[in-house]
Image (tube, rainbow, N blue to C red; front, top):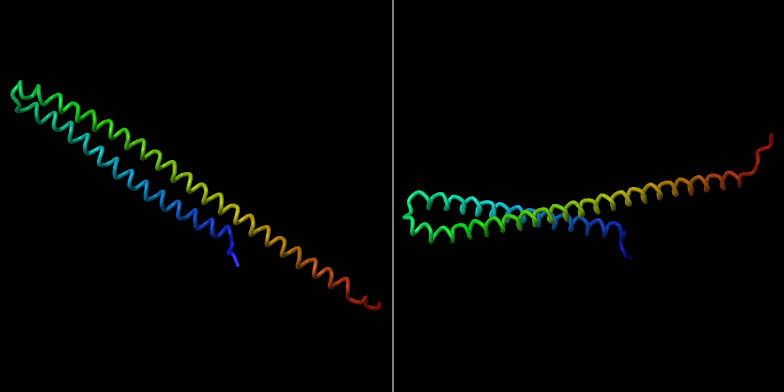
Amino acid sequence: MAGDPLRSLARLRRLETTEAKRRLGEAFGRLAAADQRVVEAAAALVRETAGAAPDDYATWLRRGLAERDRAALARGLAQSGTAAAQDLLAEARAAERGLETLRQARAKLAARLALRQAQAALDEAASRRPARPA
């Protein structure tokens, strides 16, 4: 016999939320690495300014500025990826909450139906009882 489909769906939603959390953690890791790369590129520009000969620095500067720009671009992409991962996690959590609300509503409905059936059984039993002579 197949199990409760809502229970199966709840398990799927939990797995999706777990996966979204994992992806968000990875996205934060990429963002931290990109931030570090930006810091290192900026520090390299400052470091090279201090002790370089003008001709050597001019040659290096183009490469250093390009690296800084690439690092900034990578940070922007990492920030976008992190925002997307946060959105996915929010969606997964909302789906979990929505499913839980549905499960609770169904449980309340089942409880009300059980009470109605019990009351109907009592009413039927009462109507079958012979009337007592007064």
